[in-house]
Image (cartoon, rainbow, N blue to C red; front, side, top):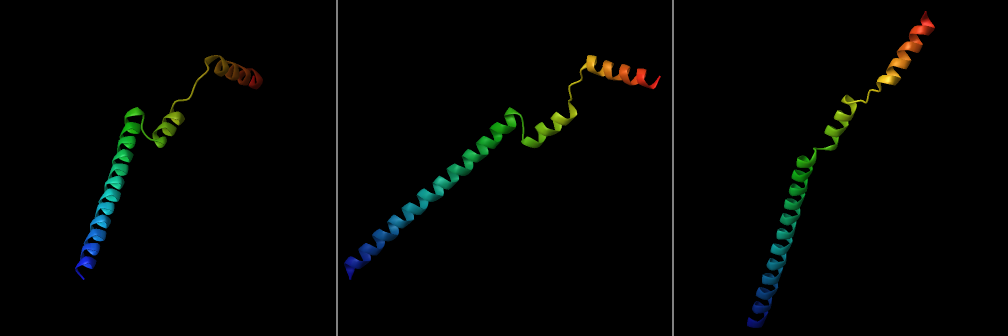
Length: 77
């Protein structure tokens, strides 16, 4: 019987070591996701922020704007 107890202790010890390895790997994965999220914020924010700025800042072409206002003004006169 004594041999069986040693085997059981060995198996439980190895199972616990494997559990710790998995937990550490999951923790490292979470940390890397946080780091990548922080890097994205530092580089320019999220997707939503870029879209909003894209809608606010539109290119204005003065020549094209002048032509359209002149052509609409001449057609109505």
